[in-house]
Length: 146
Image (cartoon, rainbow, N blue to C red; front, side, top):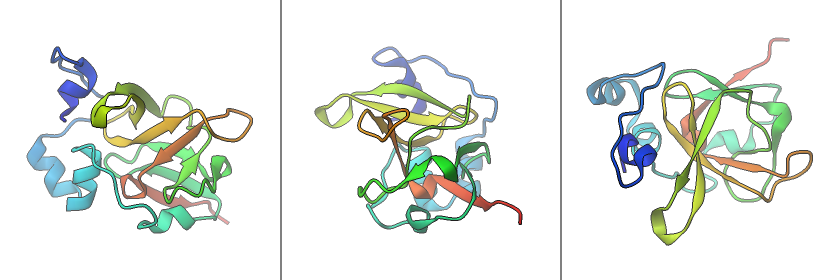
């Protein structure tokens, strides 16, 4: 499913993002797996990404455009096999309704480039009660200085 149908439902609408590249530029910038997830709305195999086990202080950013998305303080072990967070950085992500695979879920994407990150579920820990289940391959990690 492309970005147009992702945001437009049955009616295709052009959605603009602050950071945009052509498909050719995205393919040159991303690894094949990053492209499949970020641009093609794919999902990595659970437990396949080292970021699931990242515990250091730092920031998780979009692998597509570099936008900071989550801080390590909001990361928790969900047991799902994907990095999970209970709160994104303010304005970093946006959500849309995802009706793929014969179910209704809330998709999470980068607010800067529109890249697919994962989904958010209402079964997370306090204080938000949310679980942002994010593909590790869709992010990069920058450890905090010091």
